[in-house]
Image (cartoon, rainbow, N blue to C red; front, side, top):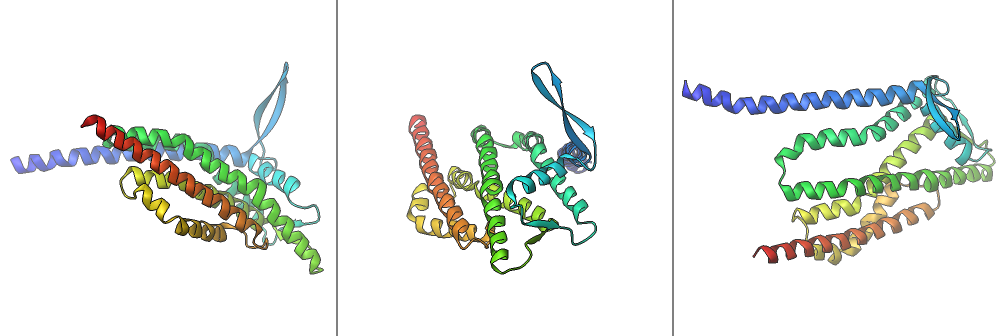
Length: 276
């Protein structure tokens, strides 16, 4: 009986963790569903309240936020002579679904992070909690900076290059609508993740996996890998200009991560001296 009771006592905390995880997953799914429905089935109109213009959502599939997101990019960034076309019947719908899902994940990310943090925080040490709290805002800013760089710099230049190259070949400059949307989402995500490099380096130093002088000693490898990543995530149709630009930026982020790693190591060493 005592063995049976001991086994049940060990199983109870595990079951509690599973129940908590399922509860938080349900909340995350509900939040994602809310934003997805908002972006895919609602548009935005503005009403005048005194001196202010207030955005008001209204039901509309044809003028939804996802549609406006893509339309705004096409109107502002794609050369007028480059005509988007639909190849398959359902391409516009699936593209709208993809954009709505991307915007939903981005908008829900603070709520997702909050639920994830509430689940894992009890198992972390206090210094680990402080480190995670300090990295949340930089992580969001770096991802947003990378996504904005792709949206405003890489993508317009790429489409302009494609348009001029089509004209040079004397062919009709057209582009699949589905490929436009998939390229936008893929490059924004990839560049946003690539811009997280300094945080990854700082985290590895904080955990004691890599020492700061190792980052500095192997800076040539860091620069080379930065240019390899740039080559992977770049469109590859710009004659090397965008690849070089991304590579230089990622190399700069590598050295920034090295500097942050030295700062973290120095801070840890000073704490050890104080405690001893």
